[in-house]
Image (cartoon, rainbow, N blue to C red):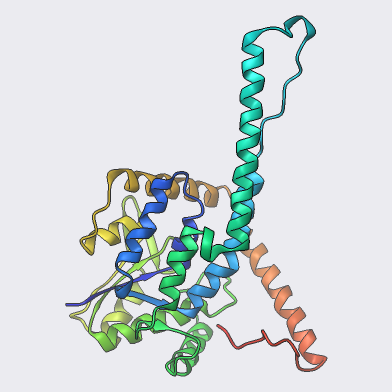
Length: 295
């Protein structure tokens, strides 16, 4: 039976958080199976909306060490001179790294390896890609809206957008059309939970997939992209697996350290943003050509 893969936007964005080039090599594996990847314009939008802030966080994290004071009595000390030379070298390297990141922001299609692979997936011209101009979009969007209003998963607590519902409805549609098994790679709790080394898809989503697609077709949730790739017979190295494990451990710690009311804070900020948009709407139609009906 045909097997397809849906990769959530958080997986693409996590490539900007890896520590070494080994972690980046995983995205080249994605490129090798892009003909099997389910994608939507919603995932593309979320990736491109959040990519720059993550890169800016990286730039702000790169701080060069400051030169240390040199006591006159040690002015000829060789160890001190060597240390000052090392600091100067580090400052130069940090400056060059920031220039590289600046080029990545300025021209990602040329300088950003993550963006280049992601863009090839977003632009692929096949029936697995729900682009903005696809006629199926008019079918999927109303279903996603009804799903969101009914409170169905996948959705985050206090979610105010239909993005997750939009992606899920497209997954269901494709799986039904292709009679295919579907793997979902995501590190959010929208689609299910992780316990130990195992990830379990939400009970309702599993039942719905069986009812709407087929009981012969399977849907599986993975928090590790490397595990997904193995099922496609992609050779993943132990170094790549370790890099992803380290990334997930760091990510989970950051989420654990967030205050309990963090979701409420984010929801309030989103509600305020939407209220401002509604107030602008009362003043008349927008002349902004970028305004759209995106999910």
